[in-house]
Amino acid sequence: MPGIGLPDPVFTSFELTFFSVSGSGWACATQIPNGGYCSAPKPCLSYINGTNANLTRYNFQIYTQSNSSYYFRLPIVALIRDNTTNGVKQIILLVSSTDLANQDGDFIVFGQAFFQNFEAVFYA
Image 1: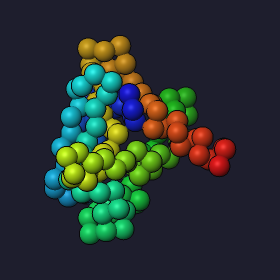
Image 2 (image 1 turned 180 degrees about the horizontal axis):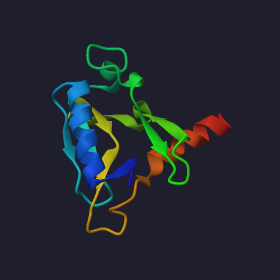
Image 3 (image 1 turned 60 degrees about the horizontal axis):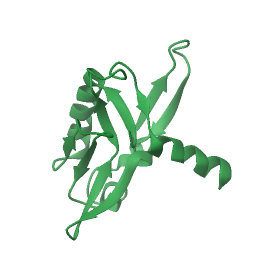
């Protein structure tokens, strides 16, 4: 899992909300080996301070099961990457759906892109 995996019902809700606030052009490839992603045919900067939705305003609030008063915030921009395919720049959002048939299907799964954020904070 490269970014963050959400259980199917949570992912569907996220996908609908995200598409409504970020504009058109997004597509999600969710059920591929090693995790899926969402993408749009524009570079990251156009979603940070460009003409599209400003993704710096959005984040995940992840609550622990033991205490619903405390949560940590994961900015959406921590999970975006620029990608170039056949000379076309696109934004990749590393959020996918966990397969319900998989043993992780009921859980939020944190991947590489999530943990890279901590290294930047503690070792920079």
